[in-house]
Image 1: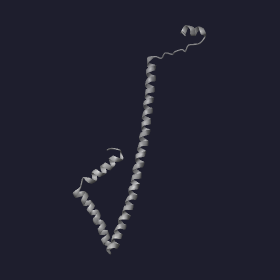
Image 2 (image 1 turned 90 degrees about the horizontal axis):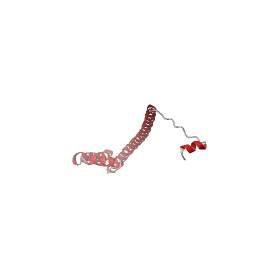
Image 3 (image 1 turned 120 degrees about the vertical axis):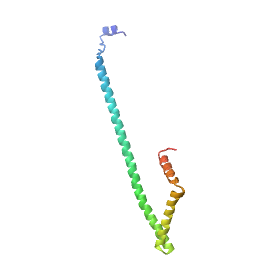
Length: 131
């Protein structure tokens, strides 16, 4: 159908309002600004969520480390008391446990100083799926 036949049929054609160039530019700039602000707000919310998740993971790791340290302290004390009972002298049990820890310290400090940092780095990288 042509526009002439539409006029003759009684149907109205939609009237096009022609906006001026400054109005079009103003609308475009306004909508672009609103879109950019919406994107920035969305990214800000994503950063907040990501930061909250990381803080929660760090807090849970800290709590687990404290619980682990308390458990290890009790285990070390128990082993020292057991060795003290077996040797007949309480101080000998604590001395044996202390010697075991000191030998570990000297092993990692003098004989294999790069072993522990490399091991920790591998564990941290593997937790983030790096090979």
